[in-house]
Length: 95
Image 1: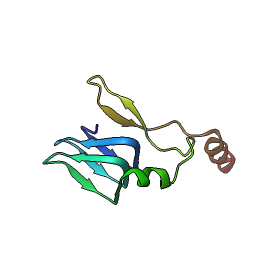
Image 2: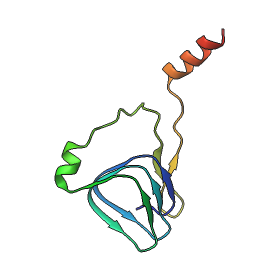
Image 3: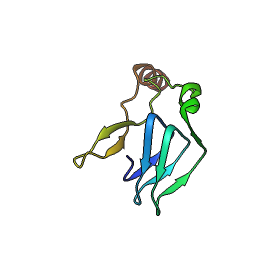
Image 4: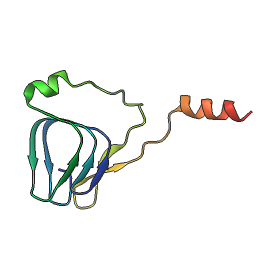
């Protein structure tokens, strides 16, 4: 369930629900999609059982936001720490 703002792509094996307060900017892939009146979605949408099977997977170290439950149990996006490779590349460029 999205009850806030997300900038980035969303992929779900099951269902994505956008509440009236949801603001999503990015592509969405899900088996099922529910959109409440008032939700905002800017991007491409692919929905259905086959959509999830053919969805391109992104490595877990890609630096994308990771969804974590908030206090109210709603997911929220948080930036992921930079990977070691990115950190080494930045430090190498400063020398």
